[in-house]
Image (cartoon, rainbow, N blue to C red; front, side, top):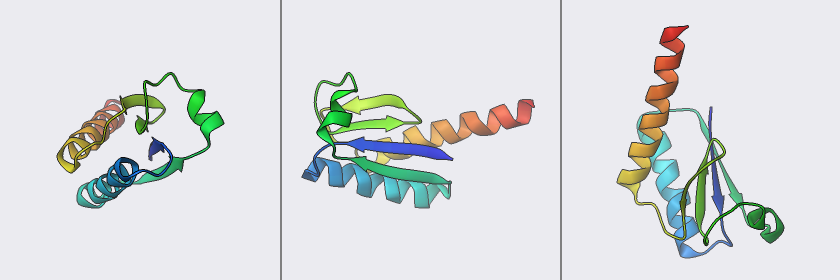
Length: 90
């Protein structure tokens, strides 16, 4: 399962990222969880330039900007494809 974390205080950009992640998950029909982190102490533990920030499977993908649907689709699709290739190699 892919883990998506959105770091931010609930601004419109955070909500856009969440909405676009949900749409991409549904479109790709993948298993993923979306967690919104609004706790400032937790956010400060990450080395980010600003919020919102997007982490996928613990890796920082973006900070200080929104992610459009098409970009989210590409990100999640690439991760899912890597996962499928790893399973095929086993």
